[in-house]
Image (tube, rainbow, N blue to C red; front, side, top):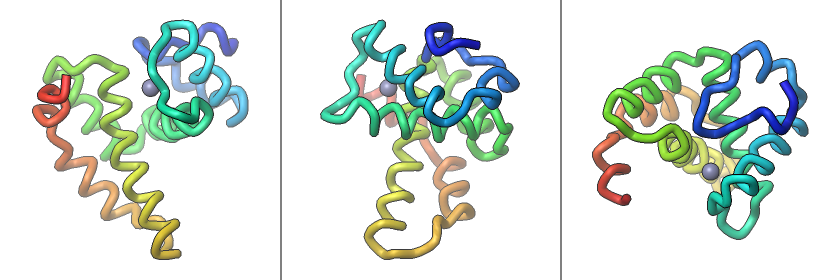
Length: 125
Ligand SMILES: [Zn+2]
């Protein structure tokens, strides 16, 4: 898989995704946003990095992330919005690590993935 093959709208093959190094994954996501003119906020690299964390958890089959993803997709939420919804949990927990100098609380993050509500993200659109 090359950087140009990645499309946020379609899941990459887990093997191909995990075979790319972290820098290539970030570049693939950044490039895909540029290609589709998708908004990234003030920092395209930061946006892509959070995407990559979610995409890698999906590729690794992390249970809480995969089940939240499946729930959103079954509720008719498009893939990019679904990734952003999952990224909102990742971002919140990374902020807690930065602000409280605590370790990343995977159990708390998993609970947040499990309770993430597709309806909340549909309403924003
Ligand atoms: Zn995005």
